[in-house]
Image (cartoon, rainbow, N blue to C red; front, side, top):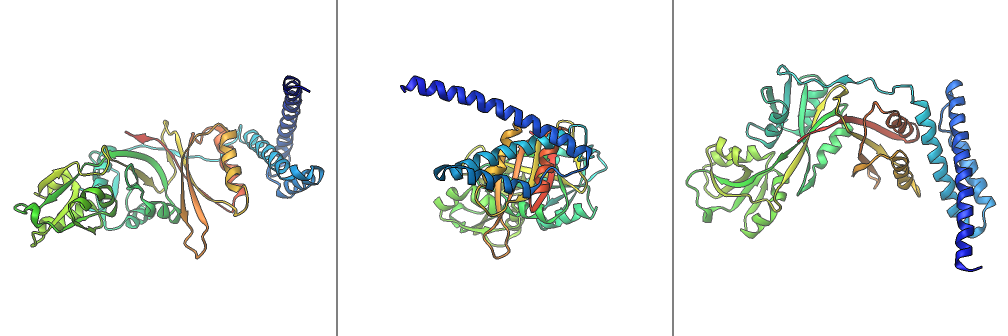
Length: 372
């Protein structure tokens, strides 16, 4: 056979494979209808295992693994089709509509002048803000109903993820209802009368110090961590020593009556931080277009690949994958995923149901949109 003849035979086989695939998926859809009518689960692990074992035993030695991958993928697609059928006229979630009123009380970590307060004001311009010492205090206050919403940083465009926030999302029973992106205008600020040559220590939140690490290193300053940028500014403004400075926003420096030595000291400009708005109950706005989940994958070959397949099959765009250690003495991790969609869509509900049924640990974190 020449090359054209080989390709022609492959094309013919591809057509036959497509016809067989189409027929198989239709049979799977009919199976889903039967399961719905008879209240049976979609996921049956024992049957899947038997099919793969049979495929391996019927395959040539050099194709056993490849054939197992192919049929595993086919079954994953089948399950997605069945879940979509199951949730076509069924709702998994009954969220309340997100509404923002001036009467809501907002929780932020830090003190007045913090970047968290600036983010909160973009969402809640006139609302009362209660400040807390730690991120976890904000989560707890939302969870116990002390405040209606909490504003927490989750990612910076220069320094990356705020890992503590991810860990707290897993620990506390709250939902993400909005995100807001705020430009961070880091500057070097000192109390009035301080000379540049006297500065030895620079105080700020670890994220801000990381965002300005090049400037700090170039000037030979010693970075000292504070709970947040506003607290650092207040500390320096009240200090009796003249050898310290703070990395904070320009508005924060002005609030505490400080002198700005240099503006725009971030490693990369522009520099943005994304904040999440959390609530005790599941609240979803009409324009919600992003879903966030937390899950644990089984520690065996192909588990991450199979997870990604589910999103590809449903034409859902994964916008973020973050991993965090379980912190249980093992090296296992939890995954945090963001993907496009709205929980009113049957295919989204079907995917979430599929993940919650199959995985050892799965947590739905919210459906939201971002305020620019």
